[in-house]
Length: 170
Image (tube, rainbow, N blue to C red):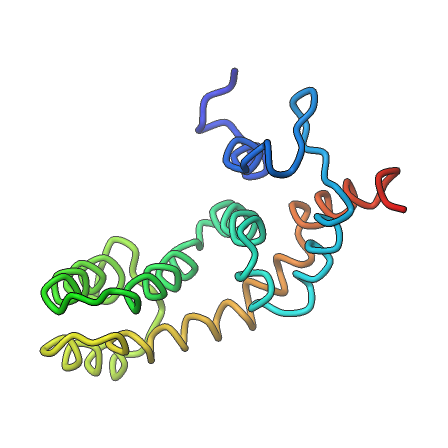
């Protein structure tokens, strides 16, 4: 079996997807009609893509292949952050998010302007569910205008879509 370092993003994806949920046979994914319908809806909007469990995984695999998955990762982390109820936990998580994605030279630094970075720094003094809202909007916009259109033209998406439009479709 090849090492994880030598696998293509599509092979990584094949390892990650719950094989039972989508149908698995002879080391290949076989998608049902429902999956084709779902996958074809991904091209309607980034929101539709991100609302699908498998759409998110496939988009993430594509972004990883381009070494640009930090935006999606940040967006997902922010969605989870908004659900935190404990103010202590929220404050602690906000600091971690800031260190990982927001501060200059952060390990997974996202592409936001200095003004937004400073607004977040101020917001963090009293962390709330909207602490990262402006940065999340910027990142979503970047994905919508740049990464998402490239994804729709990518080999990963096209190959998966083509594989579902074969004999299984009625």
